Image 1 (cartoon, rainbow, N blue to C red):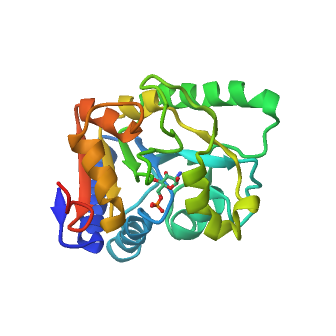
Image 2 (cartoon, rainbow, N blue to C red):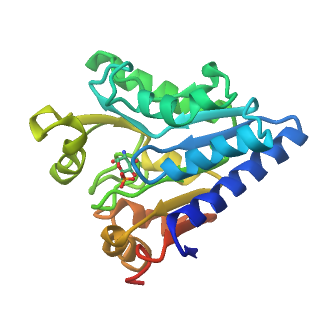
Image 3 (cartoon, helix red, strand yellow):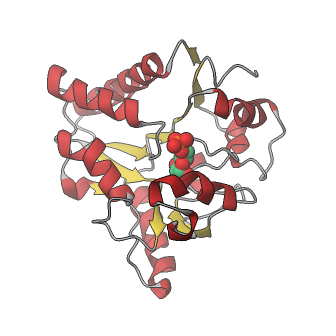
Length: 244
Ligand code: GLP
């Protein structure tokens, strides 16, 4: 779906999320959202905050699971995805703090694998993700599932690609200060989400959007796995769609 600009696109995605939350509310059900970080979803979160403040959209029945977190990472750090989510969304809405989940960046190496299994088991126990929001890395990564990630990959500790670290390094004040690893939800749980919306803005994403949507399904471009998802939308602005 191609929109004039990222603002119009973000508004439409926010409308879809709001409709889902409300329909779940009507049926006394929880709404399980998979959330993403990065610059791409900032407009979406601003719009959700607006819908809460101006139109009374409640998030009390929402349970969220974020895709990923750098490792190691202190939750109080301004670089953490915990900080990002609190500042841009959680602290402005009425979601219950105990209903928000972000992979922990402070585990010991030995704890990670059991933690990742429990993160997935928690999602499964709630019936799976109703709607998963995604951005896309310049190399086609989703979450932090870098090139080479398998379609059935599980939630795990991953090494970040050089290109991913370079993209992140500005925010960290240089490459040497940028984490080398992260914990990410695996492709398997993303593919199991009942609905997936991948958003991308700008000319800089146009080549990878073409590869992900029109190229072969390959683990070299993890977002291309979404071609095999039953209910996926790529929501783009004109510039990101310009090579299609
Ligand atoms: C990071 C995040 C991804 C995100 C990607 C793109 O790597 N872990 O979830 O999709 O960045 O970032 P941006 O939206 O800033 O282009």
